[in-house]
Length: 305
Ligand SMILES: C[S@@+](CC[C@H](N)C(=O)[O-])C[C@H]1O[C@@H](n2cnc3c(N)ncnc32)[C@H](O)[C@@H]1O
Image 1 (cartoon, protein in one colour):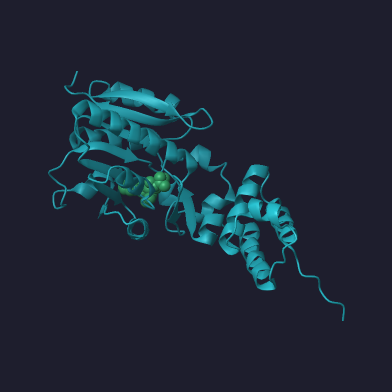
Image 2 (cartoon, rainbow, N blue to C red):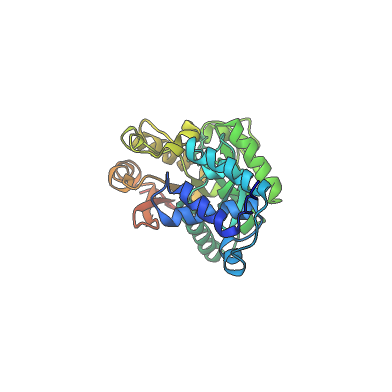
């Protein structure tokens, strides 16, 4: 019987690329997913390994593991992060599973903005922040990055979903940071019986489920794997109104609520917020990588207008 030739690294990476090209148009995304698969299953950096030794043999067992992962990725459209069990955020790995939203790159910009606001505030007040709140923490990615940056600060992270909180707890343990995790709807999680009931926060971050019915019609099949409660809202204006209403009571004067929203919400939701809360909050927005006004900050005025 003729011997089956052992596949090489270049055979494997071409195979991954051609399979991913069946579902993805974007060459950069194909390359990013291919590198993640190789890093994870071959424990090596694909571009470097390809450059150093493209003809290196790939064990049949490794090929078979990649093949079964590709089957699920391509045929079931399962997001790669769920198949690998981790997602990268702010340069670090976070455990993810279908009970929790996969952290998105644009949310890293919200964390970066929150850090710079807190640093500025700390300089002005000659005092580090004492209490931060992450509403709808999901995997805990924002809360954990903030706690890493402001180690002396109490970081409270809430979610409606017990599954999400369980994953946030595991991520906090993995990154060796202490979070106060509370279950409940938005500010109700802090309610009268909670240990933080008498506190006010220097800053609140929130990346709520903000996809509306119109946008939901145009989503990639991969989003069908993520919990609907982490993605969709019936009424974006009502959602952000609820958040700013609650923030009035829970923010220190001068503190900020900083939230992510959809690419068009600066046009549709910001006017509603300004009309209702201009006297209480000074609003500003920041763009995402694509230039959309993706993040909103409402800074609580020292005294109401
Ligand atoms: C878009 S995900 C954001 C997750 C995480 N903060 C991130 O940026 O990756 C929204 C999160 O809000 C949670 N959530 C949805 N409705 C909620 C509510 N009424 N109260 C608290 N959390 C809620 C979801 O379970 C989900 O974890």
